[in-house]
Amino acid sequence: MKRVAVVGGGVSGLTAAYRLRRLLGPEAGITVFEKTTTPGGKLRTAELAGVPYDVGAEAFLVRRPEMLALVRELGLDVMHPTKARAKIHAGGAVTGLPPGTVMGVPASAESVAGVLSEAGRKAVEAEPSLPELRLPGGDVPLGPLLRERFGDELVDRLVDPLLGGVYAGGADGLGLRATMPGLAAALAAGAGSLTAAAAAQLPANPSTAPVFGTVPGGLGTVIDRLTTASGAELRTGLPVCEIGRHGAGWRLRVGAAPTAHAPADNAFEADAVVLAVPAPSARRLLTDVVPAASAAFGEVELASMAVVALALPPGTALPEASGILIGHGERDASGVPYASKAFTFSSRKWAHLGSGPVLVRGSVGRFGEPGALRADDVELVRVVRDDLARLTGVTAAPVETLVTRWGGGLPQYGAGHLERVERIEKAVAAVPGLAIAGATLHGVGLPACVATAEAAAQRIAAHLTA
Image 1 (cartoon, one colour):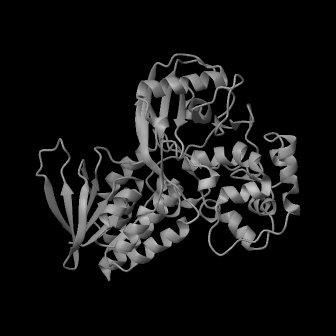
Image 2: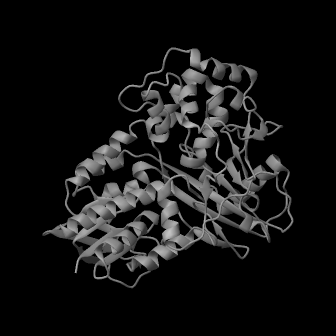
């Protein structure tokens, strides 16, 4: 019987376990180790005022196939957002999030006229007349490039809030090819300007097909289905402290959780290992096994954030929007800055959450600002409620609140990220019976994580059946 150890019980690790079961058959022994007491990683569905509510990732991109196909394969229904549109607080005012952009990079000056001042609009209008833009061979820092071509206003008011919703980081710390590969490809094909590159990425006839989806009962349902369908032995509360070669296979040292009654360390032997853990854990586990990959993982920077979920009394009036993004440094009419970077009005955004308590989630924390999360839960709730009141006028006292902290939860895809991942994958490829997966590699979204998990499972299955 072949034995596979999967380290990490998030969506990447459990998807890898599920695919391995399909590839290796019922006789394979698959064990998933998760250091926390609950599997799921960034997929976490909690109960808020009696309603299942996602306090981690709350949706996935349906225009990329991997997650959508997995959800359907697991027999789950897919729900799409309502027609409510997102808004943005930019330049001291709330306005509709403009269409006709690629993560805020505009296809025309008209598409962003409502967000920018007249001077900012003219800077966008002039961008195609600047010298032809040709990218070097490697990645380039996104923020400086956008600021040089469009000026600061577009970056600060539109691009940064959009990127902050994905990476909890701004354009100045991210790479163009790593975060907007389509734009980079259009420029490589001769678009000549960022405006033309953005236009090339937009469909000629905009589709009304939904962009995002989720599942009834919360995305934690996906974790439950993967766990069951994988048939894997799930060991929670047990961090893997060390991995090493053992003959033709592997030996793992598993440390017991502080509250467990198991011995301090346990040896576990396997024929193959899948690592689906955040960059710091991957760095530590690969130090002696694949030093080059370990070093590259150690270069990945991380952002921390918190989700503050509020259940407001039934009937509480919310703005006619799915949510509001807030630019860094934005202030209210009195000049007081906002601490939150975004609000999601879940009861507006998702039809299945439209009755009962009115559900809202605020996001706090950006890359390079760890101080935002040093406050205790009571203070974070107070800060988010204050921001919500100043932003929308909603002052209703919540019937229940829930604070979820994601310390180091979001890897930053800086200008050197693609080269870093290439080094990791090249080094791991030279080690038989080892594979990696997760958000550090090719995207932080759920479809990208699922894709890395499926590739890891294919690699391990090919090794074990060779």
